[in-house]
Image 1 (cartoon, helix red, strand yellow):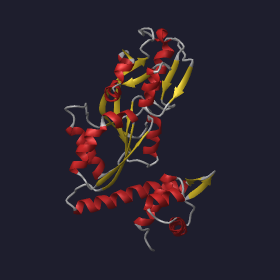
Image 2: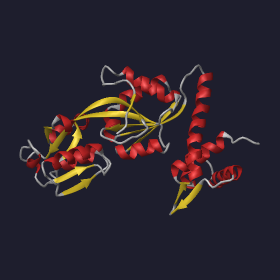
Image 3: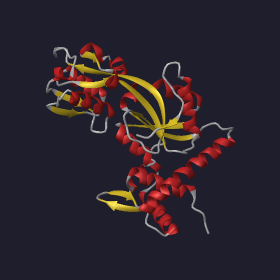
Length: 302
């Protein structure tokens, strides 16, 4: 019986990640007909449908989801085999996810050091909310992700890496805020549902029986800070974002109670997932423990 070749698995995995033949072909630098043919050949070889069409997008069938887990492991093993023959030096692609704030404030010096040590690793970074990033880890779209507490991540391995101070920001002419009631029924400016920082602020306001008049959702902290500065409402942001964006001079900044304002950023990954490139990144995080609070790995279920 002929074995499944790694190229076919790579094509299958890319189609699954991109949700269609066209985007996968662009990503793989192949013509669409070649990608379609290789997927059909793989389905014939396995005797099952790997994809189902849902609206205009291809989604994995139950058998496709099972194969994706094996494809992910086999492709990483092939990269690690090459690295082992190169004296264990990481190479290939490392796909990671991160909160927008983490990507902007915490990761640049770490990834810069990583790139200098391991120039043969191509890092692909995607940003999103905690909920969206955990889904990407579970669905094998990224190897690991930097997410913020609180979150639900059953069966994922969790490693605390950064401590963040969250603050409330308001327009400079907004009355002083010392309690939820001082926020009143103003507009809350935040990321989309799935943002753990937003949940913290909504819980704090809810405890004071305060409900925002409306919520304006944005996809970047830069936009959120600018909207607050313009007088559109209030928001919760990591203080580190204000340092990077120089936003402190344009808004009023208020500390929050420790239960709300002290947040842990964690690196989550699938249990048992092995990757030389990811292990090297975790080592880079530990090298920076003088600047960031990096703790020992432990599993956590919420």
